[in-house]
Every structure is written in C-alpha cells, then in structure tokens.
Length: 442
Image (cartoon, rainbow, N blue to C red; front, side):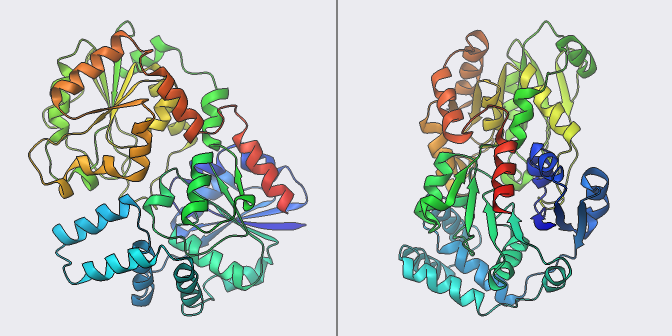
C-alpha cells in the first residue's frame, strides 16, 4: 500500500483538482491510500464529497503566522522583480505610505535577480522556521509522496518544507496561470513541478530556479468537463433565468470590492450595456461583494447570478454543480465582459469573445485604478495575443461589445492563441495526464 498526501488548502482546489478525473482515477488504485489535507472547517464537506474506502480526509487547524513568518513572507514577495510586483511596491508607497520600507523592498527586488541570493533566503527560512507543524501526520501515515496542489499557498509551503526535511518525495503544482509572476519568489523547490501550460513552464524556469526536465505540462483538469459534458438546453436555461432565449446574452462579471474599492464602476458599465440590444446576466463575485447600484433582475432584460459569497479565498469554493452552471452561462453567452479576470480564460475555452473594462467609474490615480491590473505580467501577455479587447472608455466598451455581437468570429485567431498558450490542450484528458504522472511517481 502506497500513501500519498494531497493538499486542499486554497478554496478552488476542490473544483480544480479533487472533483476532476484525477482523483477518480487515483482512487481506483487499490494499492494507493489517499490522504487529503484540508482546513478543519472543510473536513466534513470534503468527507461527503471525496471521502471513500481508500480516501482519508484530515482536517488541519490553521494557524496565524508568527512575526518571523510574516517577515519572510515580505522578503519572498519582494525578491520578485516582475512588473506585477513593481506595481505592488508602488501601491505600498502611495496608498500605504510605507516610505521607509520602500528602499528595502527595492533593494530586495534587485538582489532577487541573483541566484545565490535566492538560494540563501530559501536556506535561511528552512533553517530558521519551525519544522514540526505536520510531524504527527507524517508519523501517522508515513507517506510515500506529497503532492502540493498550490506551491505558493502558505499551508502548502509549511508541508513542503517538512517533506523536504524528511526526504519524502515532493511533487508541486502551480495552481493558476498568474501565480509565478504575482505570488513572489517560490519558497520551496519541489522535486518535480506540474504546470497547466507551456507559458507557465517558461516562467517557472525563468523565475523559480526549476530545471526544464523537472517540469511537466498537463493542462487544466477542470476544463475537461467543459469539453466532455453536454450543456443544458438553451430554452430551458433561459426560462430558468427569466430571459428570452431568442435574444443575445452579455455575460457581465463586475469586480469585487477587494479590487474596485468604492469606485462606482459597475453601475457605469451596466448603463452602457443596458443601452445595447441584448440581455445581461450579472455574475456576482464569489469572493467579496459588488455594488450594482440601481440595477437588478428584470424579466427579459437582466438576470443576477449569485454563486455565493466567501470572505476569502481559503473558504471560497465552486462545487461541481456550481462549475457546471458557470459553464452553461458561458456556453450560452454571446460576449463576456469582465475585469482583468481568469474568467477570460474560461470564456475563451468556450470560444467566446471577451472585453475587459479598463477604465474607472470616477477619476483615480494610476496606483489606485483598475487600469493598473492590465500592467500585471499575466494580463499584459494575455492582451498581446489579441484574443481579448481592452476598453479604455465607455464608448469603446459599447463599440467592442456591439462588434462582437454582430460578428463573433472577430479576433478568433487571438482566442486560439490564448488556448494554446494558457490551456495547453482542450482534449478532455488533463486530469488523466495528471493522474498518470502522480501514479508513476508513486
């Protein structure tokens, strides 16, 4: 019997990994014992959804990071000199008034270009922070392999550090397309790394000190169902939404207050969209809230879709039913309007045109604006491919949406480029590739 630890600390891991063919194929192996580590408050829900004869769910108490751990977090964040982190440092100065910290952060960002400096700080953290947080679980189960599903998540980092010290084989995964350039320097180098796409592999080689031969590209496991499942019938779906199936549909995802603050951008966008001859479904954020102003559900014109609201990304999750519903919404939409979101990749997976909103509802300085998000590394690369349009004014937003409604094949070449660059393969076999890789390492 071989034992594998699989982490599920970040909220979307249940949807992204556990609810896919990956776990189904892994649990069919009678000689494999699967131990899923998740926050205590999620233990019972995970037992109901994923528990079974050879699947054990261990609830892990979450702890507040110590002062020293917070110091190391700041160091590893600022050892990254990506454009994303340059913008973060600008915000630290302008919004948070960290004038004295700014020179230190800048110096760290320049030192982070040197490999010996990166090696030193990883060594220092490994020999400074406590190493026994998961020792009881390692002693209890004696795992043959640790699979960290999110190498940047703090709880995953603690587990990976302990696995390395105990010489337990470690496979890590980059959870999302933006993580390498937006989460700072990786704190632990796994024995092997799994990524969703070739572009993420290139970033892991460039920024994370991981040799190419130790990186494996598998695709996006939860997209398998986008390819293999049939979608709900249009008339039935639109009747449920209280909309007209004969009319075109604009999918609008407003920004959460976490990103937009008190900016009145959402009502301004809705005013533009309501002036277009189409229906609108407003997909509310899963984490945080969005103020849609005077706009609400209106038969034959506006539907408001509320997937549930979580206070943070640890507690956020999308169930299989919830993900199926999101897929139905995207499939039956004609245009997707969003804000610097991974939703753009989801939409492109369904060949849907996407327009990003790149202006604010009220004048704001750059460092506090929505426009800054489009200078993040991953968003700049996405826009370069030409499959997503960035509307910098309300008039541009209106024009772009109308053009796409009238001619949905516009920029199709760019959308295909995004699929190739960010999804690897939409062949319904990403979960299978991931399972085969993990089984081979066991």
